[in-house]
Image (cartoon, rainbow, N blue to C red; front, side, top):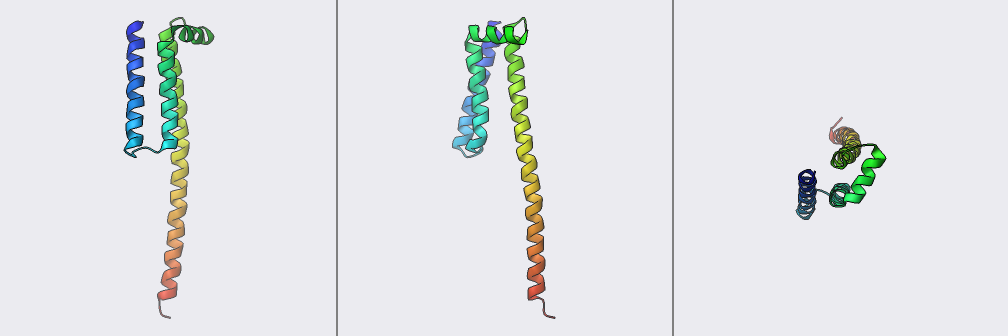
Length: 116
């Protein structure tokens, strides 16, 4: 049990460091890094607080507290991935609309500059 919790702690600390480094290098925008930071801090707190983890396991009806941690971490990351899927879909729609507007502007520009 302790090995799994220690591994989870290490991975959450690694995720925090990677997200902060990515923000610093401008590889990820700050508003998107907040989700990752909150998720990794939540996992870090749960992996270090045995009483809190046991209470979460009891609420979830899971016999093994580390498995409750893995279950909660999986759920959190699924929610984050869903949020990013929504963002990507909106960006794709915006990109299509922008390409259509550029095509309309190019058409109007060609009709203005073309002699009749």
